[in-house]
Image (spheres, one colour):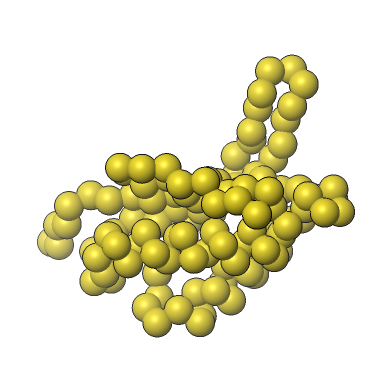
Amino acid sequence: MKVKSSYNIELYIGSVNEDTKKPFTKEELISEISKFQDEYAVMIPVCVSDVEFLCGTRYLEKGWKVSVINFPKINVKTKHLNDFMTNLARILLQVFKQNSICVVGSRKTIMIER
């Protein structure tokens, strides 16, 4: 059995392209994440989960949470996971024309903005 200290980092992204005001699909998101992973030096597995952003009765947007844990089969430091998620957020921000993407770690939350 392998045991590591627990570490989780999450990225939150909405589903609407802010330039066109049209939604993009989970499949398009997964495709972009996969391309990013293929170009990264170390393969870091991610989980993609559906979320809904809700603000009272006037705002509801579907989106996704992309998360990474320090999975025992990969040997990377938490700094490397943070860098991976921050770089992924920057790419997704550009590709999907987001105003902001939130990256949540155990010690801080970073808002990546256009």
